[in-house]
Amino acid sequence: MKAFKQLIFFGWEQALSCLFPVVIFASLAITQIIPLPFLPRYDWLLIICLFMQLWMVYSGLETQDELKVITMFHLIGLALELFKVHMGSWSYPEQGYSKIFGVPLYSGFMYASVASYLCQAWRRLKVELVKWPPFWAVVPLAAAIYLNFFIHHYWIDVRFWLSGLVMIVFWQSWVTYEVNGTRYRMPLALSFMLIGFFIWIAENIATFFGAWEYPNQTDAWSLVHLGKVSSWLLLVIVSFLIVATLKQVKGKNSTRVDTSPFL
Image (cartoon, rainbow, N blue to C red):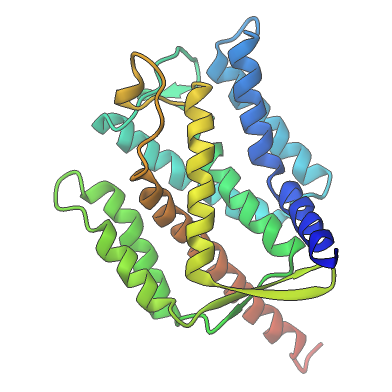
């Protein structure tokens, strides 16, 4: 019974952490079923995302520091979208005033929502990292994973080599989190795979409601290829590494301030 209660509490905290992604999915579904007047669908989605972001900061659900991280992810995701759409990996077939080179600006919020989830869950579950790899190993690995999304169009795809390197670098790393006063731990590599898998499920829902369209979905919707899990896994790793590195840097800076003899 205690385990069941802990699971319910954990699920509730996860649901609160997923508030931004849930709003995006709900907006995709609603605007697909009920066309909104005056503006194209993509523009309405951008307006909804902007208002949601402002409300989360105004209400205190997100801090100013978290907003900075989310904005950075929005820009990183938008850059990736511009390139991938240009290369024909997927497309946004509907009309919109807020489209740049075929990419609607709301798409960056889908990447930002992943960062929002990570920041929210980190704070709500009091996440701590055990045996986190050194800075010199983490930053180049994250950069290599992100660059491979671009380079593999012109060179070989090294995603599986990078996945193996992630397992090596984080083999001894654990993430600990607190659920209703009790702390638990999980191998960090396992948490990457779980988040990547659930994002793949979310991707199927998003494409079903027309968030974007893969070439094999032009005539009719079909399940996103299971191989995309590896892509989302690597993208989650990049997201997690950026958030974790910023948390580590901020934690060290806070320690320096707290221990300063001049305060």
